[in-house]
Image (cartoon, rainbow, N blue to C red; front, side, top):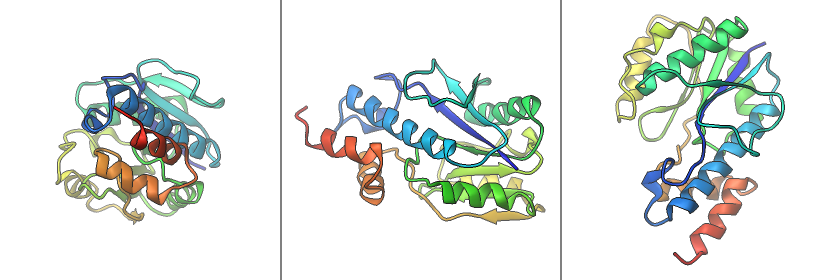
Length: 209
């Protein structure tokens, strides 16, 4: 079985989802980030795993369900923080690992089980994002060198990551949309109507600003 890692920021107004403002206020953007994080953690909690790890920048809050090991993020750039999360979780419990962020509240246990199960016969699992990045990376042998130096938050991030995985057996998951902009938020909320994120988006989108 595989462990599942979530890399996230504490949802503090002004420090998360700044690209949602405007049209949302910083407080509304932080609320949407918290809802997305809560949906993500609930999904991970419902998925079989050897260990569930939250690599967190900031402090845990009431949105954190039981059963997670919380570790601090390390490193400067996102590539360093991803590599450190893989390395630190592997030290805690060696074995395959799948890592996701807090920007895809539409994920389901079925998608995560497909990812974790694929590592029994593949070297890596890759979930592309619509913006050119990726929403999931799984490694049968969590090697930080497979992530370090990959340019992040760019339209070619996904292509660069796949080039780093060249020569490995890679299982590909469906493309999902990360919540980065207000348009992304509308799209994700419409596609995941039963989530906290969708419910709060409906309220926030209609609230006076």
